[in-house]
Image 1 (cartoon, helix red, strand yellow):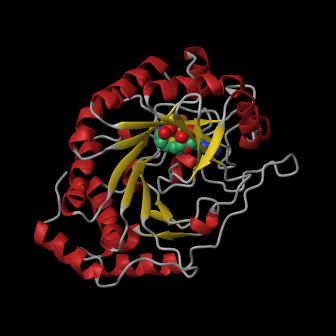
Image 2 (cartoon, rainbow, N blue to C red):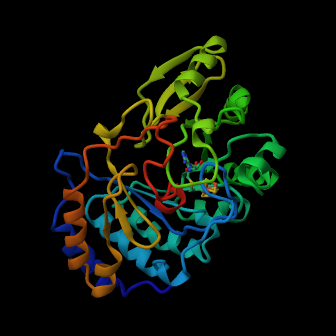
Length: 350
Ligand code: SAM
Ligand code: SF4
């Protein structure tokens, strides 16, 4: 990846910074940007994608240079945490050059954290490089520790490779948090075992409720397992104590006395966490979504491509943040069988 000339990039960032931090009309500062670097993936998780997904033509995607410029424009406006996601971010060709370029903001102190959410399939290959780019914590998604179930949930994933990746990350000194989507009849009976394994290995675990995003060709109502139910079941065997621990995300954590580990609950459906929302998301085509659960969006690709300086881009970002909604209203029930939002999680980034 060719970086923009450093003096031009520096001048653009300095000019952008004069606009001040990004604060929405509800007084929430936007300090966390999640960027989907590709809509493609080497898995087809049943709740995330349909088996026969149509992916975007490559020319619609932002180039790695454009992704760097876009992220840097947000960093100039006070974003302190950057998460690359997808699709599967580590299947994007040369993605490590983007990590390397973005790590300069860690070095200058403008960015607190550069991180990634990954399915782990390519992690064994990239863990050391990620650590060298200043990545200190990552999220790895795995919903089961049973290889056959894993293959079924991901439609063709290899759990062994994911486990190799997790081991490589740990060996490289990266803190791993496992993310598992709670799925009725799939991992419902395995959650305690997953937690025991994670905590035994020194990993945090977050459980996620299925969100109604995109048609996936499966009955979402049947997949949906409320975390309130999971928590109740776990409480029969474990002592769960609410703790104020936060990672800048929506998870609410408990400490598990018996394992000494942390367990997070991400519950967009049973708990509304919008009031503290500090994040926005950009898709791999440069569309900015101000809320995961709403359709309103802003195109940043056109202003990005219109001019080599960032004035138009920053104006578009300001206009969008001004429209950031107060919250979302996801519902999953039998009367509401269509997705609340038509785009897939793999497009907006999880
Ligand atoms: N491919 C990477 C991965 O799986 O970690 C990054 C992208 S994935 C879209 C990010 C996270 O979103 C994963 O933890 C995944 O389980 C979760 N996810 C995907 N679709 C979801 C849905 N409909 N509801 C809840 N979580 C979902
Ligand atoms: Fe791919 Fe992640 Fe979606 Fe699974 S959840 S299909 S790994 S993008």
